[in-house]
Length: 90
Figure 1: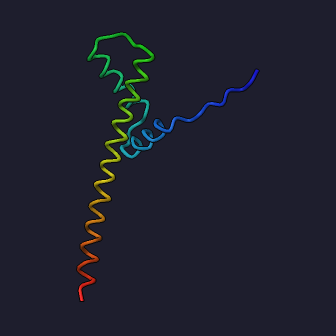
Figure 2: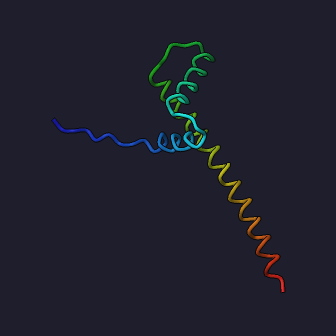
Figure 3: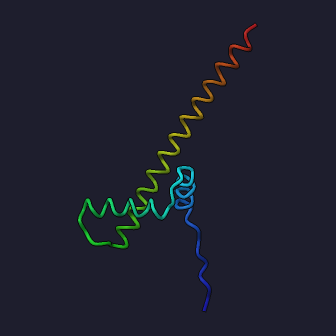
């Protein structure tokens, strides 16, 4: 019997990293997302629905983090540009 290599999920790893910065666990976050959706639709747990819901929430969280980091970089670049411009005046 051949061994099946389990590949790591880069989205999950990224979300875990983001949540760690927020002092949250992936497991608790996942439960919160799933429970919220369950209450909204008042449905029994569906494995495919759960995976899709968590994937969607993961992508949203990643995009929020990317946007936040981009804003920080833009702010730092503007600050660096203005400070360099004022020091380079002859």
